[in-house]
Image (cartoon, rainbow, N blue to C red; front, side):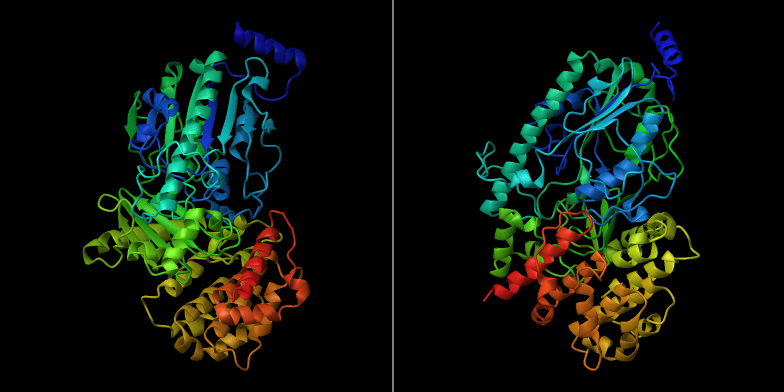
Length: 619
C-alpha cells in the first residue's frame, strides 16, 4: 500500500527523479571529533560511555579502523569523496581545490537515488562542493524534515570532544587526573594527566549526546528501519595524536548497527556484540554507504565497500598522510599492515613538535616543550621536538605507544622493505599529486584540477618526482653527487626535491653545487626558486647570488601565491637567527598582521608573521 501511494503521488505531482524505495534503509551517522577508541566497548578502562557501549552490544565494532588523515579537514574530505586526499590534491589544510567535472561527493549520489540527506552541522572539506550536496546542512538539519516515507541519510557531528574543548579552562574534573592512564608516548606530567582526564570527561559528555540522538530515533519509531554508524574523525585532540600519521593519530572507533530487516546487507561475521578484524579506512565509508543504499560506487572512488551488495575484499594495507597543517609545512606518509606501522618522513628536518599556533594553545603542549628545553625528558619524549627519522617502523604488539623505532633493526628488514614498497606503489597508483610542493601544484592546475594533473603521465611523471623525494629524504645516505644533475631535470618537482636533498646533506653538499643551484634561482617554478634560495642561505653558501632577494620575494603578500608565502615564511622561521635577520629586511607593509579569515591561506600567513615577530621580541 505504501509503495502504491508513493507511486501515485509521484505521478500526480510530476516528481522528477527516482521514486522513494520502501525497501531501502535509512542511514544515521553519529560522528565525534578528535577522539580515538576511548570507549568502554573498546576496552578503555578510563571510559564512561554507557550509550555507545549499549549500541556496540547490539552491533559490531571494527578493531582496526584508520581515519587516513590525522586532522579533521582532510579526514572529512576523504570521507565525502571516497578518494585519498593526495590523489585529489586536497590534503593541505583548508586548501579548497576542485574536483574534475562529473565527480561528485557521495551524498549527491544518495540524493539522486531519492534519499533526504542532512548534515548537522560541520562540513570543513578541502574540496569545493561540486553543486548542492545536502538537502540541508545546518545546526537544525534533521531527518524529520523529509517527505513522508522518504529514506534519509542524516549526519550528526559532535564537537564536544574537539581539541579546543579538551583544553578549555576552567574545567571541573570528573575523571581524576591522578588516576587516568597516560600512554607511553606522553611524559607523565601533571598537565598531561589533566589533558587526558578532561579528554575522558568530554567523551562522557559526547556519549550522552549520542544517546539522545539514538533515543530520538527510537521515539520516532525508526530504529527498525535505520542503519546506525558511529565513528570518531581521527585520533585524540592532543599532541602526538592529532596531526600524527602514526596509529595514535589515525586509529578511531567505528560501530556499525544493521537492524534485523536489513541483515542481508550486513558484513561477513556480523553478530551482535562482535568485534571484527577487517581493516577499514575512511576512504571506504563512501562506497559502503552507497552499497547499503543499493547503489554501485563510481569507479573513481578508491575505497572498498565493507557492507552491502557491493562489498569487496579488504585492502590488506591502510594508508595515512599528512602535509601542511594550518601554517606549518611537512610531508609524511604512513601504512599499517596487521600490527606493523611504517612512517616515511619526506621532510626529515621538520619536527613533530614544531611550533604550530593552534597546537601550542594546549597547556600540556607548553609544559612538554618547557621540560624539553630544560633537558629533563627521557629520549622517547624528547624525540617529539627533534628532527624526524627518515623512516619509522613500529610493532604494535610489543610497542603500542610507537616509541621504539625499529627501522634499523636487522631482524625487521623484511617488514621494512615490504611496507616501504607497498607505500611507494600506492602513491604511484593513486597519483599522489601532493608530492609536488603546494605552490607548484596550484601553478600547474590553473586550468585543470590536481587530480587530472596527477593522473596524466604526459604532463607529470609522479614516479620520477617520488623517486627523487625518496632519495632526497633518505638522510641515512650521505651521497649527493646525483642531485646537481637532477637540478637540470625538465620536471620542476624533481628539481625541487633535488634542491631539498642537497640542503638536507648540509654545507659540503651545497657548497659543491653552488653553480647549478644558483642557475635555478631564476627557475620557472617559484617553489623551486624558493627551495634553492633556502638551501643556499641555510648553509651559508649564498654569497654572490641573489638567494636573499628570491626568498624575500616569496614572502610577499599579493604578488606571491599564498602557498608560496607559507613556504618562504616557514623557511625563515626554520633558519633561526639568519631567518629573523632576513625577516626584518621585509618591507613594513609585508609584515602587517591582517585578519584574513579566508580558507585560502590568509590567516595562516598572518600566524607566521606573528610567530616571526614574537621571536624577534624575545630578549
